Length: 307
Image (cartoon, rainbow, N blue to C red):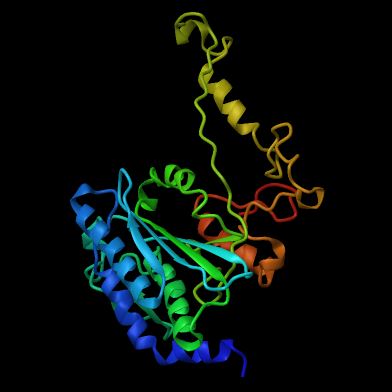
């Protein structure tokens, strides 16, 4: 029997206890965007510190200008890789309440039309349910083998749903303590309800303020509309020209940092092709939510957007 088999067996046998712990965490109304729930956010952080300490981590609650961070370490595997695990304990607001079929902070297991069971509660997937899968895995490893196969640092924040204003300053201030060989961010999705996924990369964001000025003074549209350049039309043209007809970004040098083999347009996926199960079918299924009044680019990068 491999060392993993008894750990998996312990997870299976302890499923009810694992669910009970998750449900305790899900009952805490840790809505980070509303100051009225600041106490629940702190209670969630304290709950995680206590649970991680009980497992065998050295865990602590760290203050920030906003909601606290949770940091935990286990370094009992000298010479082995060091993994930094990230998750967040805060959740989205629940408005409008009338659209919920049950109270959002009263977790329950429901049976779907296809017979599958799922947990219904705010935060059950984003992100309390996800982070607790890692915590429960660590619990099973520690209970079964007395340790973990790698060194682990855990970082849970409480402001992800409000833009993570404290995260970057905290990372910079604690760079040495949070050093690692590989980081695992547990805040992504599955390909579908039955297919897990490893997300290797995500699209980034750039925020800029662009000012377009054409005339030196206000012009009357009845006299100048059409012949004179309109800043709105100019800006619309600039935005349209950011991508070509295949979806590729046209900015000079945009792809220079990418290996040549990766310089192709695959706008419909988030992970590398090697991690896509049945990639052609998966791309089509991933595109489906965008089809209502929109379109997806063809993976081949040729022709018009495919509806």
